[in-house]
Image 1 (cartoon, one colour):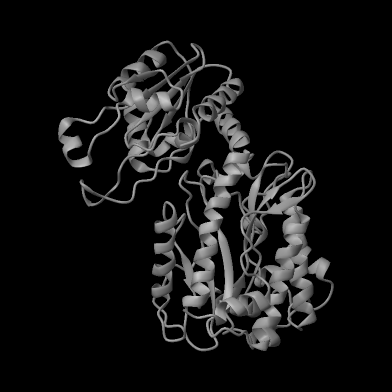
Image 2 (cartoon, one colour):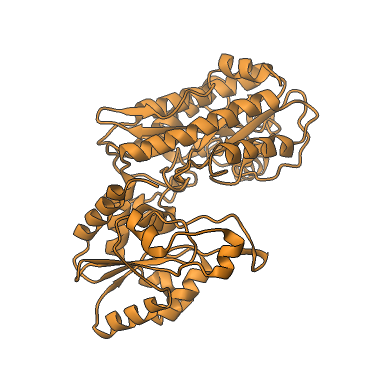
Amino acid sequence: MFSTKTYTTRRAQLKKKIDNGVILLLGNNDAPMNYTDNTYHYRQDSTFLYYFGLEQPELAAVIDIDENKEIIFGNDFTLDEIVWMGPQQTMKQKAEKVGVKVTKPADELETFLKDAIGKKRKIHFIPQYRHDNMLKFQKLLGIDANKINDYSSISLIKAITEQRSVKSKEEIAEIENAISISYEMQTGAMSYAKPGMMEREIAGFIAGLASSMGNGIAFPIIFSRNGQTLHNHFHGNILKEGDIVVNDSGAESDEHYASDITRTFPVSGKFTAQQREIYQIVLDANLAGIKGVKPGISFREVHFKSALVIAEGLKALGFMKGSMKEAVKAGAHALFFPHGLGHLLGLDVHDLENFGENNFGYDENVKRSTQFGSKSLRFARILKPGIVLTIEPGIYFIPELIDKWKAEKKFTEYINYPKVESYKKFGGIRIEDDVVVTNTGSRVLGIPIPKTIDEVEAAASEKI
């Protein structure tokens, strides 16, 4: 937990952005795996954490703008619960740690809101992603659970996303703490993976590192020899001599801030000549993206700078032809690079995405593309100091996509399909770092993790 001042300052800043009414924030509840007392690992809602810092299930909070009051609703532990869970602080004691003076039992929230609604006061709330909370909103506000997000407060969404998108020094320090765990996860995987092992052995190993050093993994681990599948959560393949594997994984720090690092490495310790060529192009695109990040330009512009590096590199190897500027403008590069360059990072690995990408990643000046590949760019807005995001270009040979585009004779003026056909079993390569926008450019966060060909081969050759 951060200092009391951190939470009181955050709430004070938010109150300045909302003219009137009541801000209602629900925390998350325990989610049963197969019966009530056997639950999934608990994770508090990130917005609730940001403003109120408490990790206990079944909490709610209101910020009363009109009366300048803050209340946390939640119940003290009963004696029966203490028998099972051990001694617990009271709600009042917990609330004092985050600068809230008033607490009330959970069942008084409904009465409070009915009174506010009766007085025709505006209830501001954010979009919900958990169905149990949607049902709770239905009970509290009388809105159909299936339509609750249609009534979320645009002004509150904009205020929170503006505030949370710019990270403080203490938040950046937490992200770097998470990256220090990623260092162990990435280098550990490189030295542990060997031909003959199953992917799940390495995925389980690095998940254990995340749990032993922090709050576990920040998202389901992507560890696969089939790197052409962008979000491949299957870990049942046996690693073979000559394979390259994509390790896209991240950890949560003690304060729940995420890291998100990807490295691609050779299982046997050495890249083949073909793998080295493609890897170097992706690395060049990664470095170009990092160099391109600076305040005052749109992240979409940075995305296309990296895409052009990929296209030019593939042209030099004979996969593409013609004008690469025109090819990228037309979207031909997306056969090999079908996703966005990166996303915001913070309390969530895809920070703020529960608010809807168009609510924070785009605005009236930066509209979302409808073009394949480019439309998957999650954040495209103008960059400013304090924004933390990922830079993760990749090159993938996706057989199904290649077959489709070839059959449609799509972009034949830019794509050399006979050459591409010969690489349909290649797989994919992605390289990802986490960066913060500075006053003059960007800084790669955390301890450097092996990334050049020589560094990766050295790390992957030192087997444990």
